[in-house]
Length: 169
Ligand code: ADP
Image (cartoon, rainbow, N blue to C red; front, side):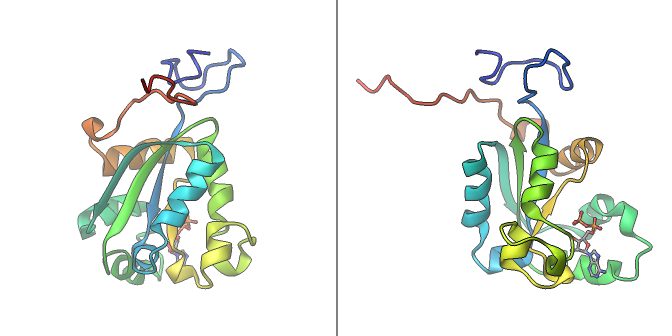
């Protein structure tokens, strides 16, 4: 059990034990912050059982965004995307847990909110692709790249998750 409670096994272990150390980057975009959705989005990840290991609010620079969205630079919507993402502060987080990358993509829903299922963040809170509330890394490699881009190592905490604290006396 100690391996499950924040143990230090290597990512991708084939021991059959769930890899609880996988991490992903989730960001509440400026429209989500403006609409006071930060709490509800955090709640969904906590409820699902994932562990928050990093969290901060910031006004994003063009430079950071151009690195974050480097694959989209040639898209026609790219200038609008930069404008959107710098229109106000974002809340960026790192969540940890078994298959958290895949699970969060499912929880966040389709890029275009009109195609996102009800029950997903985008399906429940948005209706337009250029105001889709939240970002979630789309692969393990993408998550590693994005976490390094947005967070310094010292900003991410390894903490043990106990079901209950019984030492209250
Ligand atoms: P995702 O955010 O689901 O990983 P992409 O990486 O394809 O999707 O796109 C990044 C972001 O760019 C989207 O979340 C959305 O905010 C914006 N975007 C994508 N496609 C469009 C589009 N056709 N028009 C406007 N904005 C778009």
